[in-house]
Image 1 (tube, helix red, strand yellow):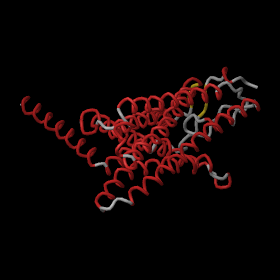
Image 2 (tube, one colour):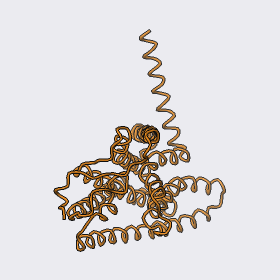
Image 3 (cartoon, rainbow, N blue to C red):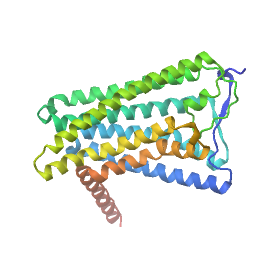
Image 4 (spheres, helix red, strand yellow):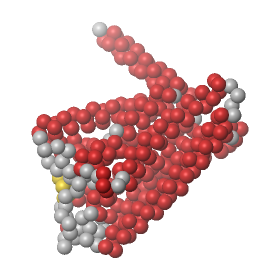
Length: 319
């Protein structure tokens, strides 16, 4: 039996065996990473610079972009490094850090999406109380609570997972460090049960938030359908659809990845699902929000126009 603290490194799952496919995965991950960095960077800049986006939804969207950037920077760089240099190793401390930040950003994103649902509920169902219930102080407190809860959740899971003795080797069946795959290496039954209890508590709280989201959207749709004008209904729906799309894709991929029947499980399916919920969302979420949010599109367009105009002026003055 080898203690986890004495283990020097873990072996991650290779994305491909052939060198050509490894390089293909590297370039694919690089393209997704650059798209995520550019898209989320544009949203952060637009929300920070345009006063029209200094709203509760804009503030929460800024926080959501930060979690997306955190997720893409946690898992993808190591996977790109391993694909480029044809290796599969990750250090023990590196694995612990990767697991901590992945759980931290993933949990915080779910909490922020729940808060954004509450924002839409108040805006549509209780518009007269919007300024009171979602003032700047209340928004700051809710965002801080989401980040603090995500941090505490990640700290508990990481500390408990890496306190387990490991005696089943050091090969993880995943291209990044994840709790279920590390638990498979454990030889401590009591520690395994302790971590599964923690996962059960987290899952229960997540289910409570899910019920709140469903209840909120039932109330939102009932309120929208009572709006007499078609234009008013369309405007109300357009503010909810991006959030609903991001939330649905987030929950569907994560739930299917963790709750799928063992009978349909396979290495290729598991790898595809892990990419869908850990790599793709940071690049997909900004696209969904920018396509449906006219104010955000206008802010990004103005910002890019100013940047291009300034660059052209600098070139002309240099000439």
